[in-house]
Length: 120
Image 1 (cartoon, rainbow, N blue to C red):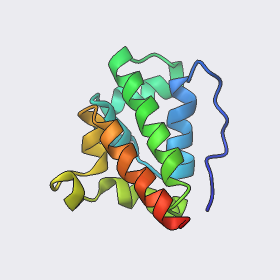
Image 2 (cartoon, helix red, strand yellow; image 1 turned 30 degrees about the vertical axis):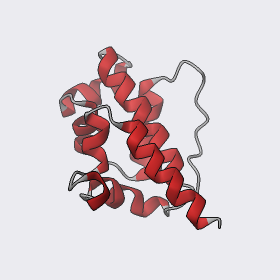
Image 3 (tube, helix red, strand yellow; image 1 turned 120 degrees about the horizontal axis):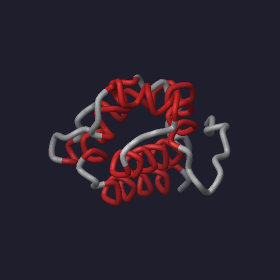
Image 4 (spheres, rainbow, N blue to C red; image 1 turned 90 degrees about the vertical axis):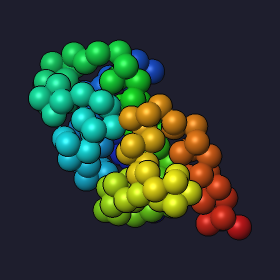
């Protein structure tokens, strides 16, 4: 499987993460803004100026981490579809909705279980 190719510094610059999410995982501005809980304009401005409210930055960090995990078990071109589709395991919510609700630990747990199954 393909992995995200951008190695981010410890500061986790949101603009680099947004760029990687768009380029490597094929997420749209709308996908990212929905998960971050901000407008599409805010995401575009962040990509340009690296200015974004802290809560949205945290969610972008979470989304980036989730995509990195997913890239271990899902081809990159399918990550967007996987994130957008409601899942029974999440009671009909999509993984993007879980990121927005700050429920990423629950999401990561499921992805790790899938990861462990794929290498068993």
